[in-house]
Image 1 (cartoon, rainbow, N blue to C red):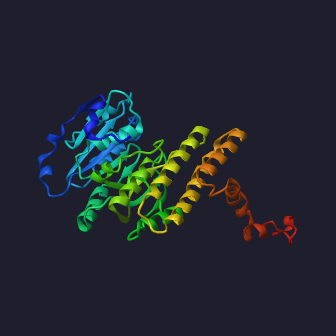
Image 2 (cartoon, rainbow, N blue to C red; image 1 turned 120 degrees about the vertical axis):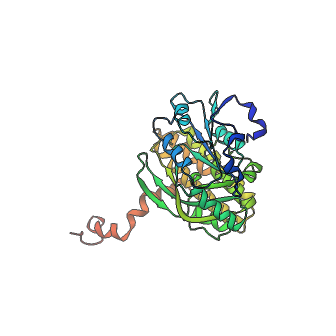
Length: 348
């Protein structure tokens, strides 16, 4: 369910720091559109919260509000946010934990900006992220989403990979095909949304809130278009975590089916081809989470659930062949093990 500004009083919360009317008059008078950063946070005071806040307040775009929605943390979150003497910050503490997905939509419901960035409390954005995105909007006109490239960082902040965004000029059909062919990746941290269109399309919602950010990207891009920027301007923090419980795999499947239903309703050329690729791609993603399930019986049930619910497009047998058997059949492997395989002398 999407929680708009009109039903925000359904939640109990405390508002600190400033009210929206008190936002810096110089910013309000600028001819540049107001942009909202919605920082959803829970118990990050001891690690990443300050880094995220530093990223937000360091933005070079002059017309900015920063909404921090504290999802009833029991750490020092409130003290850390209040330590920032920045009139652009609006701190809101929920009286009870409303769940991550509802907190995302709460941030959206509070936003006054024409464009909205949902900022996870462990991710990063470069100081000119908002400015670069908005300059492209001002040059090209209003759009649904603006995407930059993304760097993947680990828990310690080390860069693990860099993913520029080379999707400029592609239709949504070709954009999705590139995604399913692993030629691009979708990350929330490097995406700026049109606030009005995001609200009209339901905000951040999905069956289990695992793919709600991607669902929002597809719905908004389908309705109002995309602008793609090649420069890498955001950092997605990848944590080592176990996503392999049977229940969690089932949730990934439910959200994958939800995503396919969105694609079916998009305005696309070659829709059947796109849907086939989506089933293959999402099956592969779901299969990856199954290996951590300890019970062989539960593993088998999880594999069948993925295979059947995602349209029998990519079988577990084919997946394991591609993952474990096919790589061993390369010429390098054959040459190295020629003697043992009985096809010639072993490599010395």
